[in-house]
Amino acid sequence: MKKVGIVMGSDSDLPVIQKAVDILRELEVPYEVHIYSAHRTPEEAKSFAASAREKGFGVMIAAAGMAAHLAGAVAANTTLPVIGIPCKGPVFDGMDALLSTVQMPSGIPVASVAVNGGANAALLAAQILAVEDSALAAKLDAKRAADAAKVLAKDRDIAASL
Ligand code: RP5
Image 1: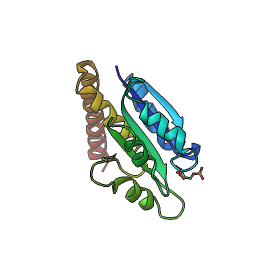
Image 2: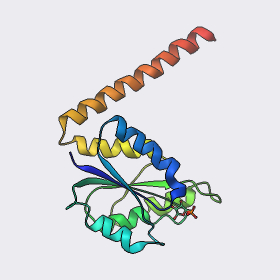
Image 3: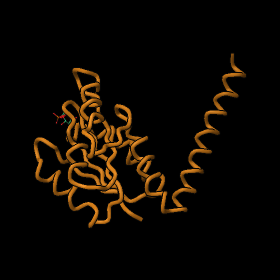
Image 4: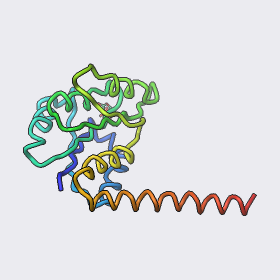
């Protein structure tokens, strides 16, 4: 199976990335995690993206906050699909990172998930890999069904308690 390449701009983004890692582990999808910043370590970020396809990655996840250029910088250096996670910052509640991540120029796409959307980033990455992997697709179907069953159990509980 192809790997998911995960990069975050700072170790302060780790709680968001942890949510993605938890999902990938649950689905038994291989991944590799790095801290590379578009601003502080631009050469390493570029090199990781540029070499990703030949190193066996199939999709990239990039998480950053504030002036969040990391997903765009990764996307500029690979034609693998790139999923951006805007991370909530201390001043603008993630709106700064959301706009920095999602407002990419035509020709260099980034698929942005919600602010702090680590879980959905991992699920989307797995869904991309599952296009060519029926076993992974079956795991995703089973997870959807299990998640729906949890919601329906809550519905039964609340109906009984109110
Ligand atoms: C961004 O700046 C990082 O992705 C992080 O979300 C934010 C703050 O970084 P630190 O100052 O906590 O290292 O580049």
